[in-house]
Amino acid sequence: MSDAWLVGRAQELMAIAQSSHLADQLDAASEVDEILEEAQGRGEPRIVAQLLRAAAVVRLVTPGLVDLSDPLLDEMLAHTQRHGLVVLEAEAHALRGRRFLLGNVEDKALTEVARGLAMLEEGLTPDPVLDKRTWNRLLASALQSTGLVLTQLGVFALADEVLARANEAIRESAGPHQIYVHLLNRTRLKIGWGLRIERVDNFDEAMAHFAMASAIAKAVEGPFRESLHPGRRDRSAADQVPVIGAAHALAAPSSEHLDRLWTLMELSMYARELIIVAIALARCLETEQRVDEGLKVLSDARKRLEHDTSEPTLMLCLVREFARLSDTAGEETVSALQSYATALEVELWQMQEARTSTLITRRDHERLTRAHGAIAQQAMQDPLTGLPNRRALDEKMATLITGQTYPLSIALVDLDGFKVVNDRYSHAEGDDVLRVIASTLRQALRGDDMVARYGGDEFVVLLPGAPLSAAQAALGRAVDAVAGLPLDLSRGVTLSVGVISLRPRETANQALSRADSAMYVAKRQGGSQVAAVAGEADPEA
Image 1 (tube, rainbow, N blue to C red):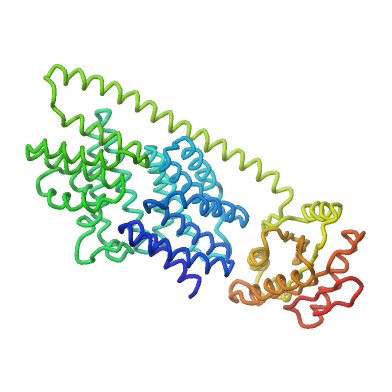
Image 2 (image 1 turned 45 degrees about the vertical axis):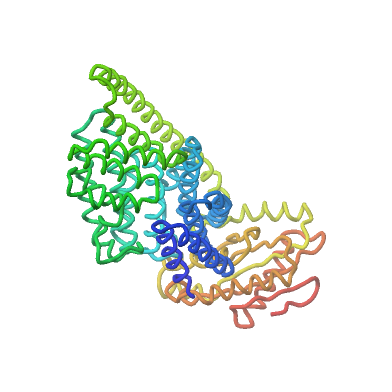
């Protein structure tokens, strides 16, 4: 099974979990765990991060498993931070925001989505290890997850901006399923926005949103047929996907939608689907003077969602719709209640604007915090590879040696054939090769190991707690990983590595000099290998 197969199957399992009933969801959770274990055994950080995301999403949408998403999201955050995977880290924050909404902790959800937004609004540069299409897909997924939480919070204008950015990435690189999911999210956003605007009596603008939702829903039909949605391909998305069918009904309520909406009520698995379909169905029943049936639909939906906290804004829309259809008092009393409700809605709208302001403030604070951290980090970071620089290396070595950290293995890494790349291609191509190899070297080692750029095409690796034999084996894996890179990424460059074990009372310069001598042994023996030396012994390949 290739890495691409693992990621592809995980995407299928997420689609199954989001569109199936409990038995299939539990099966999906079990299988995604097996795939995650396989990915963790291989150790490729980007693949592991995507599988952690899949395992968390499957649990977030499966009743009874939501709490089990917490350790997975914690692991995803730690993993992405450790490996510098900013886009996937931003998505982890968005997914945590989604988790907090399920736990009715709205303020924490605001904080998480603000953190993710700050990361996604940085000057992001594509990951050099990934091709452009894969990078765009990861960026689009993070933006979609963020837009989904913003929609749930009712911050519609900002959600619209985020999903518009996702559309740019999707337009260039997405397959049918991601296009389908994106259009579904845009449809849902427009419906939620329209329902919210109705509550302050802005009916014309609300209808414009419903009309746009219906137009987007029509565009869903093409990619739906090629998506991973486990539905029937001989029937339309509008007949099988609750939000899509409801979009058409809200744009033009009439009896022609009734049969479809009754079916979609049964298919609605999540609060957002149930609320939107119930409101659409009640309005279509109202056009047929069947108000009592519409009230029962709304009442039943409220009972089913009595303990659900995932959609606070839509839930208020459901309650308002029930109140609007109710006619249990005289005209004068109804008028007074409507006046009160209107005043209450204006106050809620102001609270919504305050929520948006809070979110933007937290996003800006997070952005400034990250910028300050980035400035401090730049003083200790090599600008080309993103690895720690010579200054950071000197400080770390001094700390380890002063603290008498034993065993401590130290390696000096030199690139074989790098001068040829600069001479034959260009220095810009050489820079690309340096970045790719630096990233590959970093990924092949433990999170506690330090990989620093020593200068030119040389790197130093510190392996605290690693005996020489273990360090030699780990560096051998790094040599193999670089040798196995596609030629268009490595240009044939390999690694010669010299590794030593720190002696008692040895200085940093003495240790690096011995590692340098060991590295030249690896060079003289043909390169693309590790030479190790312990104590006073001669280096061994």
